[in-house]
Amino acid sequence: MNYSVIPEPREMQTGTKTLFTLTRLCNISSEAGCEKAEACLKKFLSDAFSLELLGTGKESVILRIDGTMQKSESYILTVKENEVQIIGSDEAGVFYGVQSLRQLLFQGNLELPEVYINDGPRFSYRGFMLDCGRYFFTKEAVFVFLEMMALHKLNTFHWHLSEDQGFRAQIMSKLLLTEIGSYRSHTNFNKRKHEGYYTVEDMKEIVEYAHRLCIKVIPEIDTPGHTVAMIAAYPELSCFDRDLTVATHWGVKHDVLCVGKESTFTFMQEVIDELLETFTDGAFHLGGDEVPVTRWRLCPHCQKRMKEEGLKNEGGLHTYYLDRMARYLKSKGTEPIMWNDSIKELMVSKDVTWQLWNDDMDKKDVVSEINSGRPFIMSNLRAYYLDLPYAQVSLKKTYEFEPVYEGIKKEKEHLVKGVEACLWTEFVPTMQKAGYCTYPRLGAFCETAWSPKEKKSYKSFLSKLPPYYSLLKGYGTDPASLSQANPGPVSKAGNLIWWERRKLCWAGLSNLIDNAYVKKTYGKK
Ligand code: ACM
Ligand code: ZN
Picture 1 (cartoon, rainbow, N blue to C red):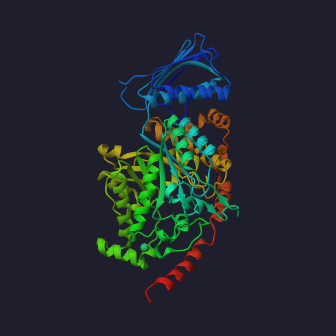
Picture 2 (cartoon, helix red, strand yellow):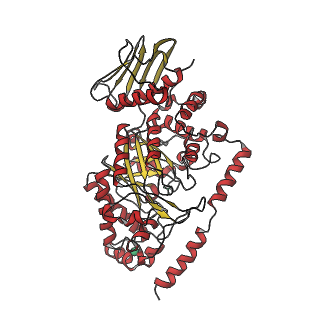
Picture 3 (cartoon, rainbow, N blue to C red):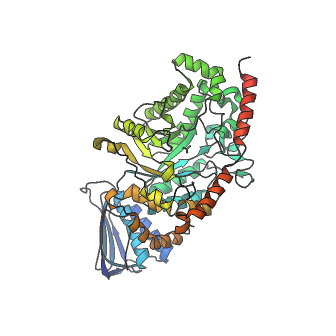
């Protein structure tokens, strides 16, 4: 049989004759620093094969670290007669060796031929984002996502915790954020109420779980836009102290944080201070996307701030807010990240990482921004938005997208820190739908995140799908079939009609009506 690994390793050779069979007698011998890898392997053997090792036989799995190996997160895996050896450059390297071993053991039903794998990642940032603002996913569901991330050798969980439709992170000094902000009376999708939030203890547990899988967690509290749920809890956060309810529908909302009032900054800094006690991985996502300036144009606080700070227009207020919050995070030793809406007139400082999601910035602008020193994470929605229908983002498209654009200078390529796949959830109310959207696209995505560019081949990826599907199903996920993931013209058309029909709502009209009301009530007489 042909053994294979997803993501494709840098170098891999396999023999044909079985040399190693993992039985109950197998012994795992691991050095200090390999505890996470060992625990992961034992859990896999127990979950997938009901195997609890006795360690009395002659076969062994040896896990160790060789600090002289060049690149971090790298490993060499060898299988010889009665012995599997994984040598990692560090803790994560050994852990990723075990991820490859899991796939091989699964394919061979615990029998392995001679194997040599020499492997390490292309990008240091390999992310997956889960939007828990639109739909709340239970703690256990988040654990499943983390397990699947590890299997795909992804190392950064970007946790989108706040949205117009729900604020999910308990903040002890501001309990209304979750007591009011985590409940919406109905949803876009099925007209039922929806609620849920993570307690501080839940979040700590999730962070610990992620750390056991060599995954860092970056929380996102999206501001100053996408904040209707926060405003519903604390109206004073908005211009005109508006009395709103948590948004029921998707769409870009016009009520955003008032960045004229000093109290907004104090509030947000306190939120960040509390979250940094739980999220200790040194990065925080400020959001910053999709911020209409309608209210700021009318708000006396915002207008006063603009004058005092000498800002030319309301776009400048957006920059002012994000730059100030970014400085605050830096002062706490935490890296700020924000979405790339912050381009055009919004020139926040160069040391702030931008996460690219839309085509507002054309490739030329992205290249010039990187060449002038800006770090980037690539999440182009045309390839990496997992919520988009396969009719728009097919498996092939995800696979073939190249995140390092032509024109980026060699010496600046490191500023493309990596890539991230995003699962937005307004149309993803269940784990079943999440599975359909995420897999097999995450398999395609992780080959860009991890494998050397020259080793990527869509044809060879397709040939690895049968064992990959078995593995996914073994983990209880519900992937899209290959024909769903690469739809033909008829199902593509059906797919798009479904999607457009779902997006249809009255949000645009109600925005217009509400804007007219605000203008009449608060505008200059
Ligand atoms: C985004 O999709 N609004 C970041
Ligand atoms: Zn204001």
